[in-house]
Length: 466
Image 1 (cartoon, rainbow, N blue to C red):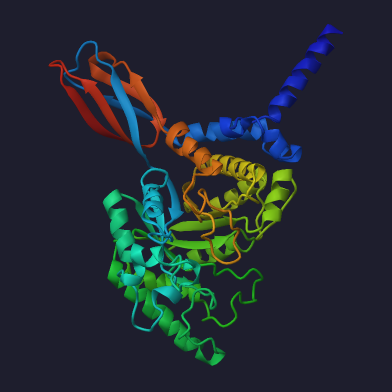
Image 2: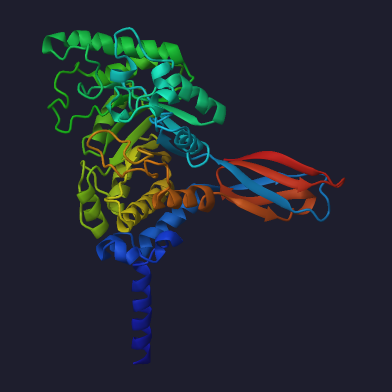
């Protein structure tokens, strides 16, 4: 009887642990009031432990270095100053938030929370008049222009700033840059009005595709190190064109044109959302010789009701995408068969409302998903899409930002900042071993090593842990 009771007690204890994965303090107390039981059953202790094991295995490395002329009693300070992993966001609202202080707060995120930025090159607003691309900023891109507007979203270039000033900003701050996109077949959202949509003009459309690619590649060379060469070109139903009038096999042709012009060092991305036809589509392009260096994968929650269903633990397949952890893992395995690194290229996780519970839901989903993505060995970059509320495209959730429209941080910001800048950064103080040898295990990235030499001077050394 005593043995049976012992087994039951242990079983109850283990079951309670399964429903209580580790969460940041900001959401720990209310987690079971916010998310349904079925949600936590999917994100159970076994899943969480595997994520922890994979983060330890794939995101950390062993460091070893030897320091000379050490003071006898010195301790060595090991500080991680940057990540190899890229945590990004689009930078579409650069100088557009309507006040200098809001713009300052927005820019400060790049280099603190984000070390990567996706830069807008949407054709419709980049070249509103034929032959007049908006490479460099003009008066309509200045902060003063946007500060004087009451309805900025009505401007044709809202969320579409000219790129040069942003590129200079990223270069100065050491931010990874990604161009998005060279070609997107969506004639409504992306094609300039001066491009004909007539079926008998499809050859002219193809000529303009090639012209745009060759002009942009010649202009930038390797200055922007990676690009979405083609965005969202997979037909959800094979044989049924996604956008109607479109040049035949334009995805393959676009990659080949870009390859002829770009330096070999520039990374070529293909970008689309979760679809069964996406992996075989990419495989076919690779087999035909298309230079596809990176697989871009979008995951968007574009509906508040779907977000609430997800929080309740219901099975969703929104935008052809499941957010159940085991389903995400299975799809990543399918993409891994392509033997290409993965960029989580566009991420939308909204707060499905404005109240406390809605912000908790956004934070918890973001926390769990970022941990899973960060643990996956072939993922090297995650890009959050809309940083600020009320700044998305038409039809996207209004509260999908990490900040309010007045640049006030939401709970989701604090959760991601806790992961990126605290939990996933290594800071240690160690005693050197014999002959000044230092050994440590830490997250991959750049480090500052500090110690005192025999003359009493403070010494520093840069160290890259790969």
